[in-house]
Image (cartoon, rainbow, N blue to C red; front, side, top):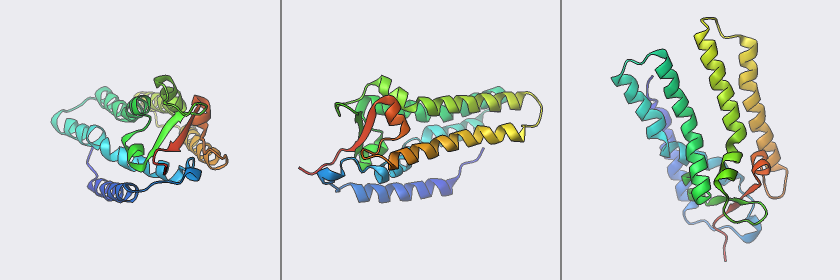
Length: 197
């Protein structure tokens, strides 16, 4: 495992640009639900926040310890699922991840537009978590079987999350309140938190 410093530098540059663009921005009331671009940029900030536990820490562990295959697999599972833990915690506690806070959007209940519960925060990510679990199980069994990974089945393992993401984007762009599929499932909506008075 090696650290990709180019990705880190690019992420820092984009994060600074995003922060600069949103720090003094206030949205008019009629843009309350127009959240595509803030939601698009928020993961840049979040990936920078999570860089230490998802990149630097695993890198250091690989440098210090000679991990066996099972330990390496568990470490990768940790890296994959830390994003979900982070998102669920911040959405359930604050209604927004750090990236969403900086881009000035928040997740609220779709009916009351009040804070969401941890249950709603979990449900929002449940399909992505399920797809990740399926992927992790597939990789684990394919890796431990000693056989080459079947190209046809691996095609579908990667195709399904891609189709889910595409369906999320299409859904979000085709309704007035910009709700993605995970918002419909969890009963949530993303709104701007910086509406002008």
